[in-house]
Image: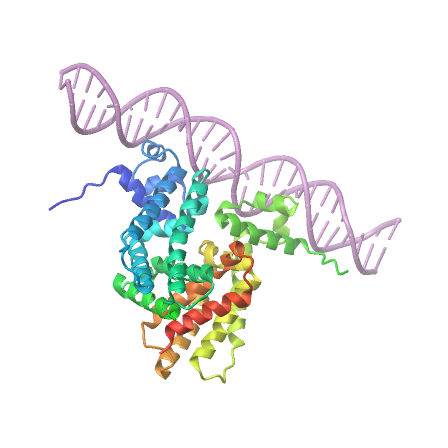
Length: 192
Length: 192
DNA sequence: TCTCAAAACTAACACTTGTTCGTTTCAAAA
DNA sequence: TTTTGAAACGAACAAGTGTTAGTTTTGAGA
């Protein structure tokens, strides 16, 4: 029986993710976080430089995962529909595997302090451009109907990024069910 | 020239909407809010009972507007597509007319205190059911393809509710452009 | 001009915020 | 058994939290 002993650092991280998601970054105090972990507030500083440092680790870890998922898309695939479907599935897969952290990523990033805030926005924009490029190429190839690219990409992200709180209320849905349904709906909407 | 003189109460409300949206409810202090209005913090309490009271007014005002918009849908219309399109347009219209307040509605409602928090959730659920019913009827009529109703409704809301920050980055888009595009995309995706 | 209520003010309370300091505890390496 | 560095601790700081009490200012109606 492999009893996974969790380090205090991991414990802090996981608890922070949960609390930040449940109550919001600025509403969660270091004392409350510490209490939930089972230590005193100052002890947290043996593992993290600051509250912001904690938020930063959470947000940038998720950012990395999104980029990694995108890299896994087959570069040989030409059909825009299949390519976008793959990107959508990868994106949702990251969310599904990090429900709490991704919720923090989406809703609490604004509390990042400079210079990390600017860095975060840049990464986010880069990632959005990758999707927009997929949509754009699909339209130029004639696979997708020609529409306002920015607006379409925005709508796709809106649908994908909200999936994290789909698990909370609808536990019965599996990741595949969710991503299949959403991908089908969006791709059919895009089709030429 | 009708120089619209704004009451202090309105001023507080509008400033609160802006600050709550920009920085988050719990990160905005009463002193900061007061300063932005041009008064001292205790003076706010001549107009609002508490910070929560302010949030409550903002959130429930938007809730009312969503319900009002829904009422305006032609009850004689039978085609599910047209009906849903009308609901989508009404929903987006409320957001477009209340960019800051609706952002607070979507992102800060969790800070409402009981019993208003429970009341808010109830209203929100009722409203979601109205949309879900539209989707459901459309499927049963054969206008829409049969899919997981909850999931589909959720996806629609995700797309609609994110429009508030579409204006921030893409000022050139008009409300009609936005709602037409999103409605077209979603309705085509739903079609049988 | 006087009145009176609405709305502004200053001062303060009780508590919480993130964080630092200096010390003690602890567990593994020597 | 001694050493050593990591990690825990209690106490404290300076600043900020929402809010109340009591007082003064303000401006419209009588």
